[in-house]
Length: 317
Image (tube, rainbow, N blue to C red; front, side, top):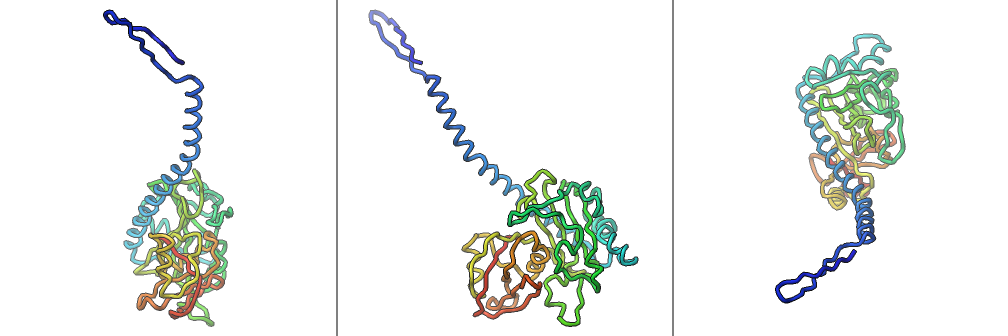
């Protein structure tokens, strides 16, 4: 729309022209703005969600670490009974009689009603597959070696809600060890995982995806426990010798690093969620030129010398 007016000042007539946008120009501008918003808003929203989840993840890890530190021993809860009672109740008793004394716990649920504790029935793995929530240790990882008999591999999951509205599954091994006559138990990455928590930071809201709103916290050793929560990167960093592996992680992501030996155990324990069937490196505490290798097929950890080349995977803490 164009508008012209004539203003008369004194003896002179002055022509003043006022211009405005036409309706077509306004519509075109709004269309362009809408297209730009449609392109940029999803990525902005994703970045905000990622930062929110990262903050929540670190806060939950801090609270859980402090709680475990206050527990003098985290083994043997729920083993005063026969095999069926242990299988059905060990994890739930660990929550009610142990964890709840040092950690704010709401609405404890057994394996048959974890949905009442707000946990989704399916989880999307880091590989994009939808996985039914495992209901016992065997379903969590068929390679998990628990206690002294296969019956104990069926120890059922329990769940609870936190005061911060997180929903958490608990996979519990009251024995905190594994015995085998053929192998040294220290070679098994999962031999000393006592408790494994799968958390959902926002319940059924979504995206219910591992590595985003869903992750894990693992606790190793019955006393002087170590609590870890590594977040694996999706892609391999490439092949490398031991003394070059750490640098490869930093090249992939400035915040990434090699997992330590406890984090290797946690990664294997939760391997069905991360869809990684290759080996992981971790730094040896004695020398940077020797590393551990985790063999995902068996769950065995062994040491490798500097010259040995292997596929490198990295994690964020």
